[in-house]
Amino acid sequence: MAASMPELVDYAYIAEKLNVSQQTVRVYATGTKQRKAGFPESVAPKTARSPLFRKKDADAFIQRRGVAG
Image (tube, rainbow, N blue to C red; front, top):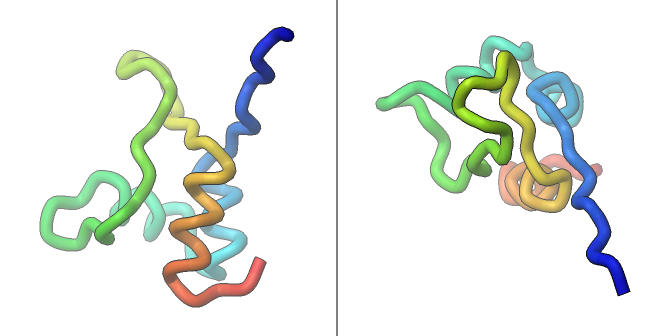
């Protein structure tokens, strides 16, 4: 049985679910002092233009933030 690829999402998905700007999500992901605990790690290569996150990890972070999906 072949392993299925995880569904991936970007900053826009997380921003929409949290009702914040993509810039705010970028701060969550990359800021040092403002970084939110538990923000998912990008699965994209470091050289990629945009980070990508496993949807299940992003949804878990969103749920912890108290936002219903």
